[in-house]
Length: 570
Ligand code: NOJ
Ligand code: MG
Image 1 (spheres, rainbow, N blue to C red):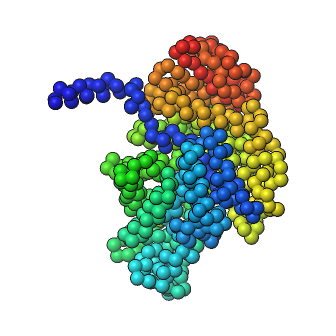
Image 2: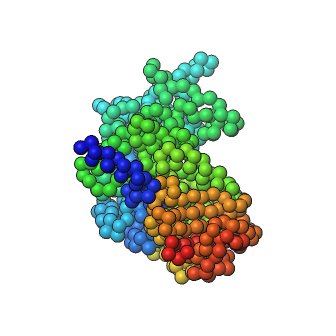
């Protein structure tokens, strides 16, 4: 027995570094994730708003471009004060998007195609129109403490009632709103129409777990968890709430930046809840089998905090805390800037958890083309798919969509509308998004050039680059990255970023990205000859052409290439 154990131990030791099991990655670890904003993806019924049947009709497209899992922004019943992030019923589909049958059809087709569906889970708050909140206002049995209620304080100077603390909501103004009926303040980290649920109440935790159970039983493959850092708030044992200190970042007392959020962000309670969800899904998998349920956290927090959301050494949490670092790049950013940002992640999260993900955009931020310029979209597309780990693409970024100047309408009037406009499918009316007469937000005026159908037919379009990279992401060289030998990357000059991906020393891909607008010369990059296998616009090279990396090589302005060699070919 002892000798058998010793043998096994030796085998494991010898294997480290290049055995198959040492490099195997779970599906989510190297997934190509794609965010769909359902209102704007595809309209099937002509009302100018995207819907589930629209998504179902475009699942083949997701397959075509190499997506492995798609995350849908909220599709649940909602008064749409925050476009679905104000949920009034967590287990119902909003009629605007379709029915539960439509949902089932969508998920069945997705699975048939080998695509995974990830839903947006919005636990921090509900809509004020949610039945739970209405019951809580009326202090109905069990619902009294379902939300965060407080009497407030009496100002000793004026004798007037004031909120319990100085907390400012993410969307500005007090985090507390007075409710006439209940004669108390309630807390909302976001809009007043989004009251925060009270996660120190076990019944709330039970209800939210039941929501997760409901969707996972319907076949959902994972959840993007909304606003994770905001779940818990600090409350003293006597029921009072501490004021937050000034941050020094803003002079406007109504701005979220006015305070340092030491009592309303990333609280211990939040971690506890996140670990509970992970445990729930691990047990679920143990009982029911199937693939790992992926939990993706939306958290604009420091890498140290994100690290704890993954695992604090005792408990496991969300596998993918979204890495928004690359979203701070702008049109002037260089390869060195990219290197600094990637390093922040690799030195902490990779070091501790061997996990990486790269997000380029979402429905809350300007589009990539607007932030970094149109011609840099394919450079960033190459970057996030070349790097080890999970890539996250916001719908439309794969064709290079830009922000659109939108005007206030009755349907929507907010500063995030410009990045939420309809997907550009074709160069016909409304970019093929709807057959109806109008669209809920205007279609971009560039749709006749920037659209899926046109880019399919152009050899080096942003879409073709995207497809080329997602295909590479499926190869062993891109999947084998857990042992640290499978990749290396960094800036090789001020403007050129290089990523090297290797599969057990036999195959190598080298991605070179020139972020700058001048020709770049590189000397003696490696002692080998490689072949051009993917070329960007502005590349004067041709497919199959060889390049000797021991010599001087050059990249044209904004040129990006993928080079390849195998043990056989060199
Ligand atoms: C983050 C979501 O992405 C955003 O759109 C929403 O407004 C807030 N969370 C509140 O749910
Ligand atoms: Mg909260």
